[in-house]
Amino acid sequence: MSGVKAHDKGQPKKWDQIYFEKLLDGAYEPILESWDALEAAFLCNWSDAAAAQVAERCLRDLKQSRAASNYTTDFRIIASELELLDAALIAAFRQGLKAEVRSKLIEFTLPKNITTLDKFISTPCLIDNMLFEAH
Image (cartoon, rainbow, N blue to C red):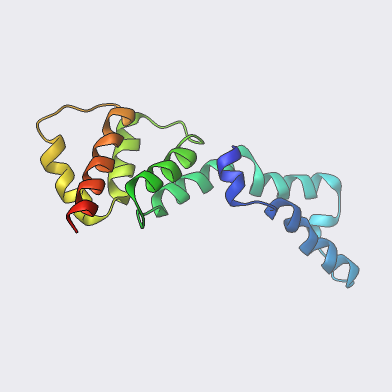
C-alpha cells in the first residue's frame, strides 16, 4: 500500500518511539511487556487492514482544490490502494469534485452510460479546463 503509506511517511517509525520514551521516563506501558504485545499493537495500527481504512478515509476526505487533473492524480494514487468496484470509485470521484464541475458533469454524462472509472475521469478534467478558460 505504497500510496497510503506515503501519506503516513515515517509514522510507523515514530509510533513506537512514544512508548520507548515513556519506558525511559519510568512509566509503565503494557504494550512493552512483551514482543507479542508490541507486535499486536503495531499491526493493529499499521497492517494492510489499517492501511485500507486510512485509504478509505483519505478518499472520502479528498476534495478538488486545484485543477481536476491534479485531483485525478491524487485520487488514482489513493484508489489504487483499495479494491473497490468502478461504480464506487466513480461515486467517490464525483463527490470530491468542485460543485461547479459536478453540476456541469451531469449535463455531459447523463445521456451516456459510463461504467468505468477510466472513461469517466476524462470528462470532469475536460469540464474543469473549459471552466478555467471561461473565467
